Length: 169
Image 1 (cartoon, rainbow, N blue to C red):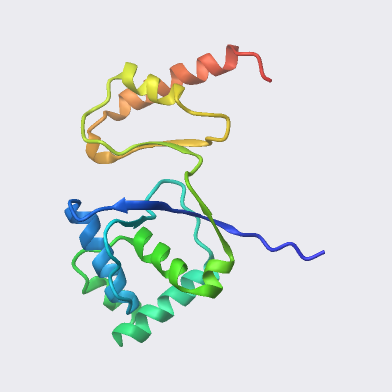
Image 2 (cartoon, one colour):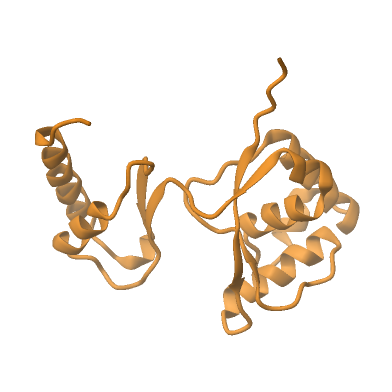
């Protein structure tokens, strides 16, 4: 029996809006690099934590960038002021039938994520960790939140201690 693995592609429909200056710019540059017309807003977002990329799809993406720009892909990306590798990959997959066939659209990743700017206290971080469900395997805090590494270590240690005393089901 031939079982083909499908790679998860985080896709959040209508999540990129015109009032998000960085995301909307990344959307535009992704489409320019791929030679695609920029879609109307709102548009899908593909940015998240624990993102999986298929090697063959990545090679095809690189080839597409080189074909469209006439440059080596590294030069093309270095000459692009603002882009998101997640949007670039996601929009490539969405617009390439062969790549789309080896991906499965998923609404979430197995990661508890914090993308905000306010620094988290240990209590707030513990609350975030408690929000994890049984499918979550990781958590991530954006570096720009300014949450001290010592606070993160303390919350993880406390969470680990709680998990070790809970009965396993």
